[in-house]
Length: 474
Image (tube, rainbow, N blue to C red; front, side, top):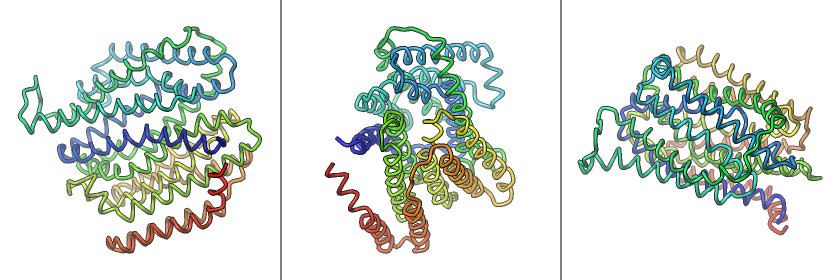
């Protein structure tokens, strides 16, 4: 099997591990927006904003550092064991600290005490399984990885429907069921699913002899802390808008904005699937003679697929709107969707480009780039939201990710030059933006929009047919 075929195979499997859960989670968006008022949906969004932030702090770049050193180390068991022990110890210390100052911390971040305790449980459990999940990916076991991820989301979905639909629908008896705080049951469903995942991964806690290497830990920490800072900046880029909108424009606007933001989930799924398959692949094949040419080819096809998704989603935006966010009170923010989709595509390209600083052990550049993006996000939002409203938050996201993408390419070509085909990549991006703009002007004429999607596919096929044939025949 050729190197590229293996990459695409692993990415498809990891994609299933991402796509299926996200698609099942996609089912929850209509349930949540039908059940929760926009202000409650805003509380739901805020909960996961904090979850994302603390997840980055608690893993402090160890997952990516693990991939880097596991792929090149002869003491792979020791790398895994050191990563695992360090994450467990720091998580337990975090738990002890938060339990000690529980009331003060929940009051400080302005979160209901019960919601805060559920968040704490979720964070601890999810951090403890980071190393086992990374081990499955690094050792080429995508099927097991996918199976456990899918079990997790099945539990989440079933419990969400039980709590938010079945109990009220059939008037089921449930102890202390609180109709005034339905959002709490979304968090409980996630916590139970994390407990199930934790139990399924317990065998991997003892996969190797537990041994802690101070030398390896220092190497992991040195490599990983800039990743952590970059991760915090990424969380700011993704969530700063949803964090300040309740204060600037109110919870109702934030809820509508967050609900419409979910329509970009398909682009997010694609990017996440790519990252899961690409990160270990890039590290494992970095010493191959034609590694850079392979990376360039992967980038091109990433852009083709991402551009196609951009055109497709915008062409059928009315359909996706009606399927995902059915409550019309959320549609006041629908205009953000094309901007957010393009922003996420820029982010995906950035993740692809980011391989240069990961392979050259210059992860501090990832930190610098993410900080630049975070500064753009914060400044743009603070200045523009009060002037043009919530649409400024979407433009801020696009500005941040486009800036990071362009700077990463410029720096990467100086430190680790990859022969990206800029002419083709630029042509596909430009075509996708033009076709998407045309689709928005047709007033939902699906005949014209379908023609635009097919035309983009035809253009890509005509330009790439020879290379695709060669890849298939290898």
